Image 1 (cartoon, helix red, strand yellow):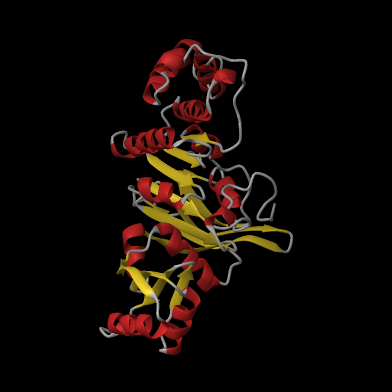
Image 2 (image 1 turned 90 degrees about the vertical axis):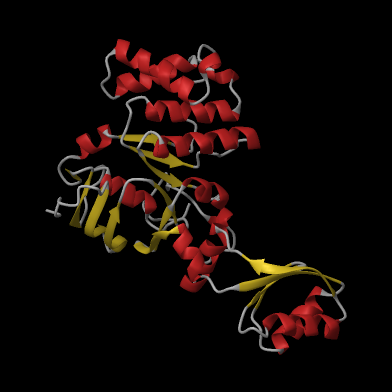
Length: 332
């Protein structure tokens, strides 16, 4: 059994392996997660859904061990699941139910008595901003209200860990901001742990302090986001007018590494001479530099750079799939 002296860990695995016949879905996962907000990233087929099913005790591991909140994933899955709230990406709501009944029913399904579930349903609907809409049928709700209802269903039993799959999917800016604020409050004020998966990197970065990236059944990154940003090469970003391709060719002929996005180029800083060389290249190429400054990478850029180094066929974060709903570590 894993040493449980590290009482601050909410999830811990040691050499976790899951095989389906000859196929290795998870290969020797060693992970220690402290409380907080963690982004779970990786392309489709990476093994994310297999990992979650293992730690929730829904499937049997091939070898290795792990615990969640101190409970053994091999023998105490029912206790683990009683401490987890899950907000799925897919539509899990009954359009004919009013919101308070839907949330109450979610509480009763996990063993809450009707009066307790009803009281909690009112409380969590207010928490997610649906106090005035709690007696409306879910079928009349906007996308944002439906997402908030799913969050309320996940929170009804006051779970210690909340798993959110694409929580801002289909939301307008106002609803998105409220959802992200609610998730942050759940961590910062509620003292709960949020595991958040999605393809909108801005959302992950706004809520989470760290990320876990899974690739081909292995954990390839587990770092704080601010620490990851420091690992990316320093770059100068310019916006040019009048010949982007010509400018790129000239920069590369001078030995500079260029990442081009249309008229925007990011040039790796090689020395203190990089900016003077860029300006010389602009003159030589007869182009105008409309903007020049230091580029600070966001999480999306960091993710794509990491995946590029891993040789994955991931061009944009829309290629990311979150928790694979069908099949284990397979492409949909």
